[in-house]
Length: 245
Ligand SMILES: Nc1ncnc2c1ncn2[C@@H]1O[C@H](COP(=O)(O)OP(=O)(O)OP(=O)(O)O)[C@@H](O)[C@H]1O
Ligand SMILES: [Mg+2]
Image 1: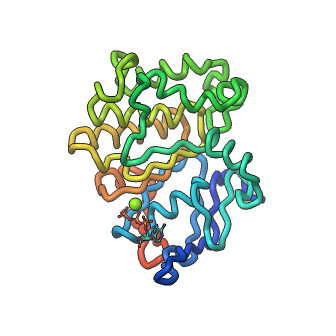
Image 2: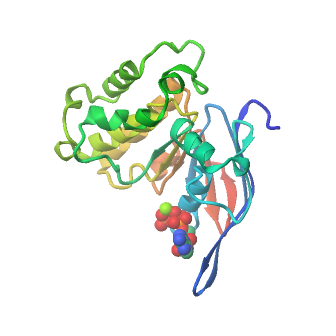
């Protein structure tokens, strides 16, 4: 059983892709722990397996061997329905591309993850929240508060095509947080943004980590974003090294 203070324990992950041209070794015994409220940047060369690692932690891909425990549960023991529930309620995802639904407004996009969640679990139980946080906050109240918080109060009825790249990415961040996940996984969230938008999104992630109590792992090529996180690890040659930075 994991200590209660550790949200995530990754142990000895090995990942090999089997291809027609032979096996592609990517992760060679990666171990990692994340405390509640922690903010971790993962850096490393292109092709070193950063996205692969994030996908395995997020249950979107399977390791060849090794273990991922989230909130004290071994994710390898869960069935597909349970994994879908973990992905929807306990983990928020942000990618380089926003993946917003073009035919839906900002408001609707943010509420999409709550459609699969029951009202009780989406708005009630709040595993990652500080106790001071009102568990009475309804889904629409949370959506409105977060959209205002990220500066999109005037953009709620707009469609993604009517938003700037930075605004779209902020919608994606609110969508990722709407179900109060304990863990936010972001894969190059600023990778497609101009310098100013990248900087403001980086700052926003830091502030949301503190304000919402959400733990985060951010994969990035941006040293500016990486050094804003509480810890930085480097993935290279299939293994992780803690960076002093
Ligand atoms: N489905 C797949 N089949 C075979 N090889 C794959 C597959 N997906 C990824 N790889 C290989 O695994 C390695 C790691 O890929 P990954 O996308 O995790 O790297 P990354 O660190 O995220 O790179 P980048 O910084 O460019 O995004 C690469 O060599 C890639 O070619
Ligand atoms: Mg990648």
